[in-house]
Image (cartoon, rainbow, N blue to C red; front, side, top):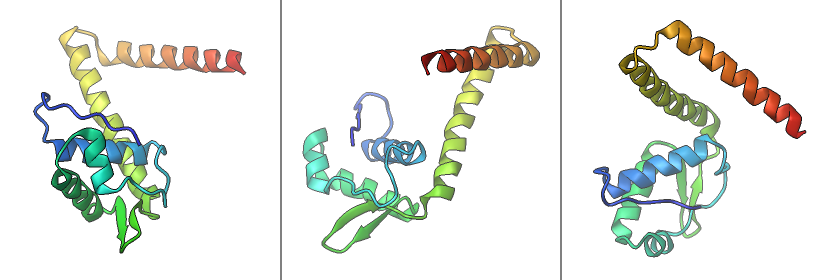
Length: 132
């Protein structure tokens, strides 16, 4: 599990960990039942205080993303499929909001934006077909 922490983006480090783990689960890069690194190991990798990792893991546990097993570690929760879908939709919604805001700033109307989305989707599908 690779996480990237930035001390300069204004988001608390524990929240960066929470958000990145949620993204990894939502995208399927972390599977249900997969073990997360031990608190001390992750803290050493990220060069942060173990209490920060422990706080992130507690937040993830409260959100139902992970479960703790006594003496066995922290694992991605089995019931994450519904949660993963909700998280994926949240991520896409945030990106759509940013796209819409940028389009409005550039005076691009919704119809033009929708056409562009369809064109790009077709181009990506065609490229994917060529790769096969």
